[in-house]
Length: 297
Image (cartoon, rainbow, N blue to C red; front, side, top):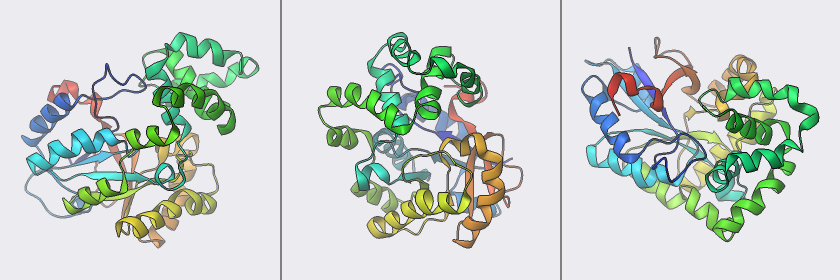
Protein backbone atom coordinates (compact mmCIF):
# COMPACT_ATOMS: atom_id res chain seq x y z
CA UNK A 1 0.00 0.00 0.00
CA UNK A 2 0.98 3.63 -0.41
CA UNK A 3 2.19 5.53 2.62
CA UNK A 4 2.93 8.99 3.93
CA UNK A 5 5.71 9.50 6.44
CA UNK A 6 5.53 12.21 9.09
CA UNK A 7 8.66 14.20 9.93
CA UNK A 8 9.22 17.05 12.34
CA UNK A 9 12.78 17.89 13.40
CA UNK A 10 15.67 16.70 11.24
CA UNK A 11 18.64 17.32 13.54
CA UNK A 12 20.95 15.58 15.96
CA UNK A 13 19.01 14.24 18.99
CA UNK A 14 21.72 15.28 21.43
CA UNK A 15 21.47 18.86 20.17
CA UNK A 16 17.66 19.16 20.32
CA UNK A 17 16.02 17.43 23.27
CA UNK A 18 12.63 19.12 23.15
CA UNK A 19 11.02 16.52 20.91
CA UNK A 20 11.98 13.34 19.05
CA UNK A 21 14.19 14.32 16.11
CA UNK A 22 15.72 12.06 13.53
CA UNK A 23 19.33 12.79 12.65
CA UNK A 24 20.24 13.86 9.10
CA UNK A 25 22.32 10.70 8.68
CA UNK A 26 19.42 8.49 9.83
CA UNK A 27 17.04 10.44 7.59
CA UNK A 28 19.20 9.86 4.53
CA UNK A 29 19.53 6.16 5.27
CA UNK A 30 15.77 5.91 5.73
CA UNK A 31 15.24 7.42 2.28
CA UNK A 32 17.68 4.96 0.73
CA UNK A 33 15.91 2.04 2.40
CA UNK A 34 12.45 3.27 1.38
CA UNK A 35 13.58 3.80 -2.22
CA UNK A 36 14.02 0.05 -2.65
CA UNK A 37 10.28 -0.49 -2.23
CA UNK A 38 8.56 2.82 -2.97
CA UNK A 39 8.37 5.60 -5.50
CA UNK A 40 8.62 9.04 -3.86
CA UNK A 41 5.84 11.36 -5.06
CA UNK A 42 4.05 14.59 -4.22
CA UNK A 43 0.66 14.27 -2.48
CA UNK A 44 -1.34 14.86 -5.66
CA UNK A 45 0.48 11.99 -7.39
CA UNK A 46 -0.89 9.45 -4.93
CA UNK A 47 -4.02 9.43 -7.07
CA UNK A 48 -2.20 8.62 -10.30
CA UNK A 49 -1.44 5.07 -11.51
CA UNK A 50 2.03 3.82 -10.66
CA UNK A 51 4.16 0.71 -11.07
CA UNK A 52 5.32 0.73 -7.43
CA UNK A 53 3.67 1.69 -4.15
CA UNK A 54 4.02 5.44 -3.59
CA UNK A 55 5.51 7.29 -0.62
CA UNK A 56 4.96 10.93 0.34
CA UNK A 57 7.43 12.59 2.70
CA UNK A 58 5.54 15.11 4.86
CA UNK A 59 7.05 17.77 7.12
CA UNK A 60 5.24 19.65 9.90
CA UNK A 61 6.00 22.93 11.69
CA UNK A 62 8.28 24.78 9.25
CA UNK A 63 11.42 24.45 11.32
CA UNK A 64 14.63 25.57 9.65
CA UNK A 65 16.42 22.25 10.20
CA UNK A 66 14.07 20.81 7.57
CA UNK A 67 15.46 23.27 5.03
CA UNK A 68 19.08 22.90 6.11
CA UNK A 69 19.11 19.10 6.28
CA UNK A 70 16.06 17.30 4.87
CA UNK A 71 15.57 19.53 1.83
CA UNK A 72 19.26 19.48 0.93
CA UNK A 73 19.39 15.69 1.12
CA UNK A 74 16.19 15.36 -0.93
CA UNK A 75 17.37 17.86 -3.54
CA UNK A 76 20.63 15.97 -3.89
CA UNK A 77 18.76 12.72 -4.46
CA UNK A 78 16.02 14.20 -6.65
CA UNK A 79 13.28 13.27 -4.17
CA UNK A 80 10.10 15.41 -3.94
CA UNK A 81 8.32 16.18 -0.69
CA UNK A 82 5.50 18.06 1.01
CA UNK A 83 6.45 20.86 3.43
CA UNK A 84 3.92 22.85 5.44
CA UNK A 85 3.93 26.55 6.26
CA UNK A 86 3.26 28.11 9.67
CA UNK A 87 2.77 31.80 9.01
CA UNK A 88 2.47 33.31 12.49
CA UNK A 89 6.18 33.50 13.39
CA UNK A 90 7.09 34.98 10.00
CA UNK A 91 4.22 37.41 9.65
CA UNK A 92 3.44 38.44 13.23
CA UNK A 93 6.58 37.45 15.15
CA UNK A 94 4.40 35.21 17.33
CA UNK A 95 6.08 31.97 18.41
CA UNK A 96 3.72 29.07 19.23
CA UNK A 97 3.93 27.92 22.80
CA UNK A 98 4.79 24.36 21.82
CA UNK A 99 8.03 25.50 20.15
CA UNK A 100 8.94 27.46 23.25
CA UNK A 101 8.27 24.22 25.16
CA UNK A 102 10.64 22.27 22.92
CA UNK A 103 13.31 24.94 23.23
CA UNK A 104 12.96 25.08 27.02
CA UNK A 105 13.21 21.28 27.29
CA UNK A 106 16.41 21.45 25.25
CA UNK A 107 17.89 24.10 27.53
CA UNK A 108 16.64 23.21 31.05
CA UNK A 109 16.55 19.83 32.87
CA UNK A 110 13.00 18.46 32.77
CA UNK A 111 12.80 17.87 36.54
CA UNK A 112 13.52 21.55 37.19
CA UNK A 113 10.90 22.62 34.65
CA UNK A 114 8.26 20.32 36.13
CA UNK A 115 8.94 21.43 39.70
CA UNK A 116 8.29 25.02 38.67
CA UNK A 117 5.20 24.14 36.61
CA UNK A 118 3.63 21.75 39.12
CA UNK A 119 2.97 24.53 41.59
CA UNK A 120 0.86 26.29 38.93
CA UNK A 121 -1.43 23.34 38.17
CA UNK A 122 -1.64 21.43 41.46
CA UNK A 123 -5.44 21.84 41.56
CA UNK A 124 -5.87 20.45 38.04
CA UNK A 125 -3.78 17.32 38.29
CA UNK A 126 -6.65 15.07 37.14
CA UNK A 127 -6.35 16.62 33.67
CA UNK A 128 -2.85 15.26 33.28
CA UNK A 129 -4.13 11.79 32.34
CA UNK A 130 -4.79 13.15 28.84
CA UNK A 131 -1.05 13.74 28.50
CA UNK A 132 -0.43 10.01 28.04
CA UNK A 133 -2.75 9.88 25.03
CA UNK A 134 -1.49 12.96 23.18
CA UNK A 135 2.19 12.54 23.98
CA UNK A 136 2.43 8.75 23.98
CA UNK A 137 5.62 8.97 21.91
CA UNK A 138 7.42 10.53 24.88
CA UNK A 139 8.94 7.83 27.09
CA UNK A 140 9.36 10.26 30.01
CA UNK A 141 6.21 10.87 32.08
CA UNK A 142 7.59 14.23 33.19
CA UNK A 143 7.99 15.34 29.60
CA UNK A 144 4.40 14.32 28.86
CA UNK A 145 3.19 16.33 31.84
CA UNK A 146 5.31 19.37 30.94
CA UNK A 147 4.08 19.45 27.35
CA UNK A 148 0.43 18.87 28.23
CA UNK A 149 0.47 21.50 30.97
CA UNK A 150 2.02 24.15 28.78
CA UNK A 151 -0.03 23.35 25.67
CA UNK A 152 -3.42 22.48 27.15
CA UNK A 153 -3.86 23.38 30.84
CA UNK A 154 -2.29 26.81 31.21
CA UNK A 155 -3.55 29.62 29.04
CA UNK A 156 -1.33 30.68 26.17
CA UNK A 157 -0.49 33.84 28.09
CA UNK A 158 0.53 31.90 31.21
CA UNK A 159 2.67 29.46 29.27
CA UNK A 160 4.24 32.20 27.19
CA UNK A 161 5.14 34.22 30.27
CA UNK A 162 6.73 31.16 31.86
CA UNK A 163 8.73 30.17 28.79
CA UNK A 164 9.81 33.35 27.07
CA UNK A 165 12.18 34.42 29.83
CA UNK A 166 13.95 31.07 29.59
CA UNK A 167 14.16 30.83 25.81
CA UNK A 168 14.75 34.38 24.66
CA UNK A 169 17.41 34.92 27.30
CA UNK A 170 19.36 32.06 25.73
CA UNK A 171 18.91 33.24 22.12
CA UNK A 172 19.30 36.94 22.91
CA UNK A 173 16.09 38.23 21.30
CA UNK A 174 12.79 36.91 19.99
CA UNK A 175 13.67 37.89 16.41
CA UNK A 176 16.95 35.97 16.62
CA UNK A 177 15.11 32.90 17.87
CA UNK A 178 12.61 33.11 14.98
CA UNK A 179 15.41 33.53 12.45
CA UNK A 180 17.21 30.46 13.77
CA UNK A 181 14.06 28.40 14.32
CA UNK A 182 11.95 28.73 11.16
CA UNK A 183 12.15 28.41 7.40
CA UNK A 184 12.00 31.93 5.96
CA UNK A 185 10.10 33.21 2.94
CA UNK A 186 13.19 33.21 0.73
CA UNK A 187 13.97 29.63 1.71
CA UNK A 188 10.42 28.50 1.00
CA UNK A 189 10.77 30.12 -2.43
CA UNK A 190 13.87 28.02 -3.10
CA UNK A 191 12.01 24.88 -2.06
CA UNK A 192 9.07 25.74 -4.30
CA UNK A 193 11.42 26.32 -7.23
CA UNK A 194 13.00 22.92 -6.58
CA UNK A 195 9.61 21.23 -7.00
CA UNK A 196 8.54 20.75 -3.40
CA UNK A 197 4.83 20.96 -2.57
CA UNK A 198 3.95 23.64 0.00
CA UNK A 199 0.80 23.31 2.08
CA UNK A 200 -0.94 24.92 5.03
CA UNK A 201 -0.10 23.91 8.56
CA UNK A 202 -1.46 26.84 10.54
CA UNK A 203 -1.10 30.44 11.61
CA UNK A 204 -0.41 30.08 15.34
CA UNK A 205 -0.54 26.29 15.87
CA UNK A 206 -3.69 26.22 17.96
CA UNK A 207 -5.43 22.83 18.19
CA UNK A 208 -8.87 22.55 16.61
CA UNK A 209 -11.31 24.19 19.04
CA UNK A 210 -14.62 22.81 17.78
CA UNK A 211 -15.79 25.79 15.71
CA UNK A 212 -14.97 24.81 12.14
CA UNK A 213 -15.84 28.10 10.47
CA UNK A 214 -13.86 30.29 12.84
CA UNK A 215 -10.98 27.86 13.00
CA UNK A 216 -10.72 27.78 9.22
CA UNK A 217 -10.76 31.57 9.04
CA UNK A 218 -8.11 32.21 11.68
CA UNK A 219 -5.76 29.23 11.38
CA UNK A 220 -6.06 28.03 7.78
CA UNK A 221 -7.29 30.83 5.54
CA UNK A 222 -4.97 33.35 7.15
CA UNK A 223 -1.96 31.12 6.45
CA UNK A 224 -3.17 30.42 2.90
CA UNK A 225 -3.45 34.15 2.21
CA UNK A 226 0.10 34.63 3.49
CA UNK A 227 1.34 31.89 1.15
CA UNK A 228 -0.41 33.37 -1.85
CA UNK A 229 0.88 36.88 -1.13
CA UNK A 230 4.48 36.03 -0.25
CA UNK A 231 5.12 32.79 -2.14
CA UNK A 232 2.70 32.87 -5.05
CA UNK A 233 1.24 29.57 -3.84
CA UNK A 234 -2.45 28.72 -3.63
CA UNK A 235 -2.25 25.73 -1.28
CA UNK A 236 -4.20 22.56 -1.97
CA UNK A 237 -3.07 20.44 0.96
CA UNK A 238 -3.52 20.83 4.72
CA UNK A 239 -1.93 19.32 7.82
CA UNK A 240 -3.69 20.17 11.13
CA UNK A 241 -1.65 21.04 14.23
CA UNK A 242 -1.60 18.25 16.82
CA UNK A 243 -3.46 16.14 14.25
CA UNK A 244 -6.60 17.96 15.38
CA UNK A 245 -5.95 17.44 19.08
CA UNK A 246 -8.71 16.31 21.45
CA UNK A 247 -11.44 17.25 18.96
CA UNK A 248 -10.02 15.33 16.02
CA UNK A 249 -13.25 13.49 15.27
CA UNK A 250 -15.25 16.71 15.17
CA UNK A 251 -12.59 18.32 13.00
CA UNK A 252 -12.67 15.46 10.50
CA UNK A 253 -16.46 15.62 10.30
CA UNK A 254 -16.93 19.38 10.11
CA UNK A 255 -13.83 20.83 8.46
CA UNK A 256 -13.69 18.64 5.37
CA UNK A 257 -16.52 20.37 3.52
CA UNK A 258 -15.05 23.81 4.17
CA UNK A 259 -11.64 22.71 2.93
CA UNK A 260 -13.04 21.03 -0.17
CA UNK A 261 -15.01 24.17 -1.02
CA UNK A 262 -11.79 26.18 -0.75
CA UNK A 263 -10.03 23.92 -3.25
CA UNK A 264 -8.09 21.58 -0.96
CA UNK A 265 -7.40 18.10 -2.31
CA UNK A 266 -6.70 16.45 1.01
CA UNK A 267 -5.15 16.60 4.46
CA UNK A 268 -2.68 14.56 6.50
CA UNK A 269 -3.45 13.36 10.02
CA UNK A 270 -1.27 12.01 12.81
CA UNK A 271 -3.33 8.81 12.80
CA UNK A 272 -0.95 5.93 12.20
CA UNK A 273 -1.42 3.71 9.20
CA UNK A 274 -0.90 3.14 5.50
CA UNK A 275 -2.96 4.87 2.82
CA UNK A 276 -5.56 2.29 1.86
CA UNK A 277 -7.65 4.56 -0.37
CA UNK A 278 -5.88 7.55 -1.86
CA UNK A 279 -9.28 9.03 -2.75
CA UNK A 280 -9.98 9.66 0.93
CA UNK A 281 -9.63 13.27 2.06
CA UNK A 282 -8.02 12.62 5.46
CA UNK A 283 -4.90 10.52 5.00
CA UNK A 284 -3.02 8.56 7.65
CA UNK A 285 0.73 8.74 8.14
CA UNK A 286 3.51 6.72 9.73
CA UNK A 287 5.86 8.42 12.18
CA UNK A 288 9.42 8.39 10.86
CA UNK A 289 10.74 7.18 14.20
CA UNK A 290 8.50 4.11 14.09
CA UNK A 291 9.89 2.86 10.78
CA UNK A 292 13.16 1.75 12.29
CA UNK A 293 12.19 -1.90 12.61
CA UNK A 294 11.12 -2.16 8.95
CA UNK A 295 13.68 -0.03 7.20
CA UNK A 296 16.64 0.42 9.57
CA UNK A 297 18.03 3.66 10.91
